[in-house]
Amino acid sequence: MNSTTEKTVNNIGIIGGGIMGVTLAYRLSQLGYDITIYERSDSLGGLTKHFDYEGYRIDRFYHTILSSDMSMQNLIKEAGVEDKLHFTETKQAFYDNGQLYPFNTPVELMTYPPLKFFQRFRLGLQIVYSLMESDWREMDKVPVEDWLLKVSGKAVFEKVWKPLLRAKFDTMTGSVPATYIWSRLRRMMKTREGVTSKEMMCYLDTGYYSVIEAMEKVCRQHNAKVELNASIDKILVENGRVSGVIKTDGTIAEHDTVISTLPSPVLASLLPEGFDTFTNLLSQQEYLGVLCPLLILKQKLTPYYVLNITDDRIPFTAVVETTNLIDPKYINNYHLVYLPKYIEPNSPLATMPDDEVRTSWLKHFKQMFPDFDESLIKDFIVQRARYVEPIRPINTSDQIPSIQTPIQGLFMGNTVMIYPDLGNGEAVTKFADKMVTEILPTLKPVTAH
Image 1: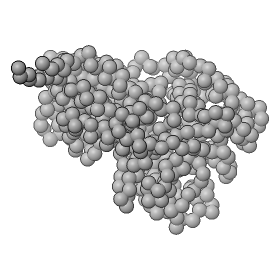
Image 2 (image 1 turned 45 degrees about the vertical axis):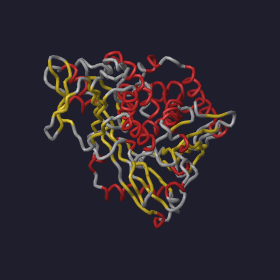
Image 3 (image 1 turned 60 degrees about the horizontal axis):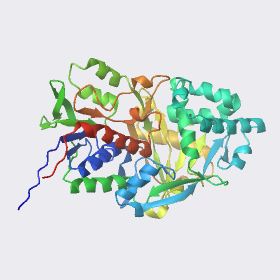
Image 4 (image 1 turned 90 degrees about the vertical axis):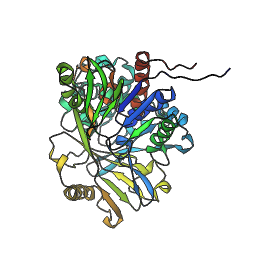
């Protein structure tokens, strides 16, 4: 007796080919659903994209995989690129008043010269307090500055916390809840190993994009389609239910399920009339962008992965030397130094010409490192992104959109929704799994006969 196989599946369109969109496609295509990814650029990856430099891959932006990021590590293993994953001890320091101070072990914390002994004790108390507090909803009600000042005191706030807040939120810290520092402290402390308090991180020797590439390969093996250079103009809705998308070239693609991984305001611009409350909710979400020049150097600059900067006269807010994590042999023995600055949408830095960025950044860079020889610079590449860090104002968690939108068959997921977790690969891939769990019961079953 011959048998035939029939599949009854939803035709699912995923808008956005960043790490969340690709993870969704990876999970759903393996379950037998027909998937099409729409990505407006010429490759998948979003913020995790790379560029080729003299035959080597270099990440456009720096990314961290902590030793405690088990969801990300499991995904890397499952996707078949575990052999490219390496663990390394990393170090960080502070740049204060022209000096570099290591800031890693309990001993270094308790002997940090810019602070007096009692101030160092209060800094340690802040870390302990964050580990003891388990209810993020309580942290959500408290302004981050108030929380830090109460526990750490003014001197610690000015020397330690204020520079970190400036680095992450530009000038918008006044509306930021305590969850942001609370989440960061809890995440980072999980990477510390033993009494030496070593910080362990991981990297992929062919770049962060390797996991995207591996998942894309699996998606294609399961007949998922990937449309690049495919911008979406509108999401089609009929009788309250999604029916497909219109691409900017005017073509229509029919889908009975659509999943958006776009930033909230971008999704709002694609919605039809008649959903004003939802559209307004999405439109009002604020994001910081980033201006992140990359110095490609011919030799090592410092021994630190991250050098936090306390001087607010310096336009960039950290020196991130990723080749103190990544072995330089994987990038032609160059040394990579990122000089990031998170910026508000109306910041003049958002449109500053690249040559002016270079002049300003290098002026301050050479003030920090007066003995630096500019002939060691192989390249200076300015990188930008508009939607990077969502800002969740104090006590507004009720305004976070749901995975299931008011439009039947339209689902959404982006970094606004992972709150109070931080916008990193670990949190994003975990949220993608959460989305799959919520979406699956709404789909037609995949059946075999």
